[in-house]
Length: 637
Image (cartoon, rainbow, N blue to C red; front, side, top):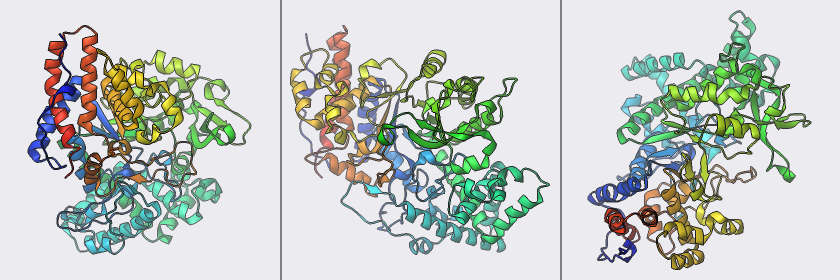
């Protein structure tokens, strides 16, 4: 006997306001979302939300407007406000992009940021008005510089990087000046912070080198250190020699001639480190995780600080996707393979630096995304003179001992293990040009998982893997925009018969197939249901979740002026609920999508021979709650 599916249930219609009450939130989460994810076997749900895409500062209940520096931050008050909202809707973690310092006001990509210094734009300056920070700033210090956030009808905002850099320079100068004044006055909190600052500089001595780069790039008007004077080009290496009087004199000269800019830079790194640790403690209280991103590249500052570790005349790129069908020249420095390991098999200087890079990526993080894994196995490199390009395994003169093939097993995996992370946990970005060397080393020898890109792959092919699954990445269009493209609609991964079939395995799916074939929004819902049904670790971009029809980064199109700028607005919660209750919603109605996925999993169990009574008895209770809240979220306020 076949038991009717939950779609045939007709609960009495109940009207609620769009925002759930506290009691409803508990029921929604504990009796709807969590049981559904457990039933599906979904262990992790990550929102892809890079640091600068965090919301604008929001309007407080007392109508006091928090001023916004110009970019978002995964640390501070705004991030703390976002966390409970995400947890309510089933998210367990956020996938941040790299959080390193951006070395240029013209280059906003986090994938070209520094390894050895953090993005100081992430400092929450509003916190510096609190007693915990010794009232280093007054509210008027901030309002006198930073523009107030205004309410907009758009469900998104854009970062203003030039404004953010200018705001930071002004505010850190004021904060450091007040800090020194309070020290002179023997202020107790300032003295405590001074001790913390000194400890930070002892723990992070490389901060001084990055402070010098910060000064020199402004002095020369370029971050291309090869165009600097010889003494400044070679300053990091020469400073290691205590007897090099000229270099140490140059360092002090740079400090003195730029006022307190050197000290301000170091102080800013300390303040950010302090806020990162506070955020880590808060996440532990919530049981919420951050996934960092170990970018494949290095910044000009990294290369300047460690020049001896890189090949002089080569850079990492990609064999396709460049101008006129040529290669992409990323201008990413290549670690010298001959310095990855010593003759006795121990880590060489470049190997130690690579290990430190991963250690830093995991510092105050719970997991990591490994960017462009090919770059750790068989990187595609090109000579800067343009005469040679190819994968490093095919260049025995450059890597005669095939040291890059040992990086995963000898450096990356042991370092992950030191941090208590097994090889199946990270987000391994294996969406690369697969060379024979990569296929052997990555999959056969190390047995590593990767990413299931449902944008152009069917999830049914990957359901038994340990992959992270996603519909779109930070380089993809949001799904509601993606589905309008001919190549997507024609792709087998979006085929209505396929999607209808996996979501209705035990009975006729023809009507549902027609529905999603003729309604793009319904097909997108089916696609996200597939994501939850077949993936035990899933990622959803913030643009998809909030129903934003803008693309965060148009991959391969560096000329797009809006790349890396998209962020959440200051009214993201109301924007989300308003979207769901509109006539043409584009945001993800979580209970509605989970309902489709749970029904699909139940149908699949029946198709595989399970007794329908038992299946629907277990799934029916979950589906009833999901259906209830799917409808509530559609109600207008």
